[in-house]
Image (cartoon, rainbow, N blue to C red; front, side):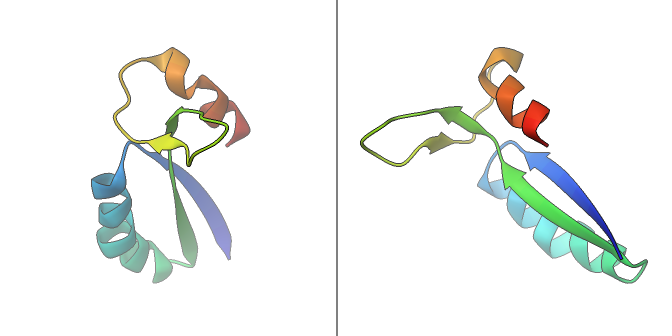
Length: 65
């Protein structure tokens, strides 16, 4: 089985990947894994996710994928 990592902008796109794309591709032996882009890192609290406004904010997420 093949795995495909998909960088999603936010929770809505993540849900679309899980509800629409993943079932379709599963039948083709492709496993879709959504990852929400982190737009702000905060040391003492959870990171902010979603709402991509520039490439610079998600550059590290894209490179890691």
